[in-house]
Image 1 (cartoon, rainbow, N blue to C red):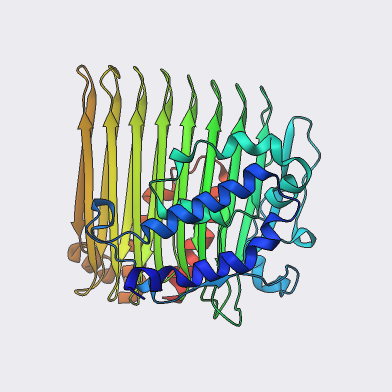
Image 2: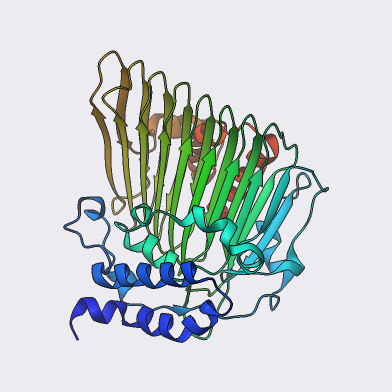
Length: 440
């Protein structure tokens, strides 16, 4: 058996063993979709370093693990151990998933609101699968990405969020995905479907939390659609264990006047890849991407973003910052594409990186592709170390070296966190960062 087939063999065996469960009472279209997606994954295999988008991230560490489908039943978990994953500052509608499966006993529900539907995808597929068929078509949305194809093949659970026209939610929505220790390292493939109607407003918090000794693969995929003048503030916090693998794709489509604000915090995991892509499909649409990533102790974190300006008078603003320490590696690749007819586009992108050791490494690649005239676009990147003069100043005021370094690192990170508009989400994000930085 060659190297590629050896890499996909655990997934092929897992798909074969799990298919009777997946096809039980599933409609024919869903069974066919899963099989087609797995065939596409098996044919392509994991991406290689010769592929431009994977130039700086090797999938070999992932291929060597051979993850099996996660089958641990929800509910067998210490509630105190997962307390840090919950948003406690204000009430929230919360769904909890353990190794990819919904754990309703751990959910916390806010007040019932007409016009909001939030449920587990597994339950939705059991009750009204045909109503969701449009979410999973066409195949071109995943056929060129093996990780999305793999997610589609093992499509089993996740979340469905639908918000009607004109709804303005005061309470945040939270999705918590927990990775726990298993007899064999397991893979889960959660799918998130979000649709905001015209003039709808909401905040969404995704938390990926790994318990000690967890060594699993989370391969997530989110589809988000914003209707005319809809607004979504979306905070994603990945704080999995130091042995967890994490892959996440977020695909957003935006209509006229919509505003999507993304905050991505990658604070954990051994091997991490996140892809965030939005399509500004109508005039006056706006996207704001904020990101913070922290690596140490041999960890690898890769952030890829893409903003497609497909209509006139669209705007985007992107700020990503990285803190790279120890013998670790980070990657940032941000692309802004301005289509031929997208005049009056206003786009700005910046990536700043702070190296804390001689062994730390960053590959940064901000990109602009402009096919239209009369646009304002800028991009840039910086790589640096802690300011020795600032350290000396703080030391001269009586601070010890570690406290002085901590203050400077904290200030560097908070330039991103300060851009979180919802106070409760900003407090939550600061608490997550303080927890990982304090343990480093």
